[in-house]
Length: 271
Ligand SMILES: Cc1cc2nc3c(=O)[nH]c(=O)nc-3n(C[C@H](O)[C@H](O)[C@H](O)COP(=O)(O)OP(=O)(O)OC[C@H]3O[C@@H](n4cnc5c(N)ncnc54)[C@H](O)[C@@H]3O)c2cc1C
Image (tube, rainbow, N blue to C red; front, side, top):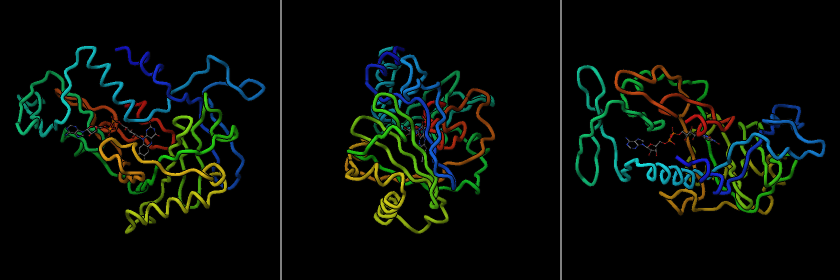
């Protein structure tokens, strides 16, 4: 599809591993995809993945798929499965105020946590022990010291545990870092909107590793194309045990098929 070439050209930051500060010992330790040179830099041919801005990344994939001949309907919603002789045989799609019947030999459910195919949704077991809530935002003017996220050309995800839960710190570009806090849902219960935002910012200020990185940084809007004004986000209820990811005439992929904890930032790669 030419996606790799397009992604290389997009200039996304390259991730070469993860730095953790976890538990009581606050010494940072790394889990890198390759060994560092003696001076702490990485060899030119180090294995890497990209740290992408999701909206830009999705737009690149859509563009590559379209060029490869895929017909893409935006502003459409798959409403229900069509079934024939015990198999999934297509979907009814709501588009421009009409219900369109689309038949398929194999339907791929890539609907994320929503889950489109009922058999897969019904077979999910929700994990009470992992009932978490995430608060997150994107900061401009945040720092990238080598000890934590690495270097602007080859970076690491930085993860640190805190009494409230754990933080991610993911450099996305020279001026942009994604910062999020994953906390127990029980602690965050009954708090929403502005209060969640203030709690998130206060928790980041209390974290000794994050405070100096975020000194002088501020939240930016414009990261969510569906709501360009927003500069703070929350997410909840993403942890489930998958019971079923395929059946006659259908298969699921990504979050529709299985849950992956965001700790290792591997969800999009797996999807
Ligand atoms: C707090 C948190 C932090 C995370 N951090 C990271 C990270 O740092 N790195 C990483 O790689 N992953 C991360 N993940 C995981 C990552 O977000 C998911 O694994 C990834 O988005 C899954 O991709 P997907 O395409 O399967 O689903 P999604 O990204 O959810 O996409 C599904 C799409 O299907 C559409 N859709 C749903 N239902 C329908 C329907 N009926 N008809 C038409 N369209 C429909 C939705 O609108 C959406 O566009 C994180 C997750 C959480 C909860």
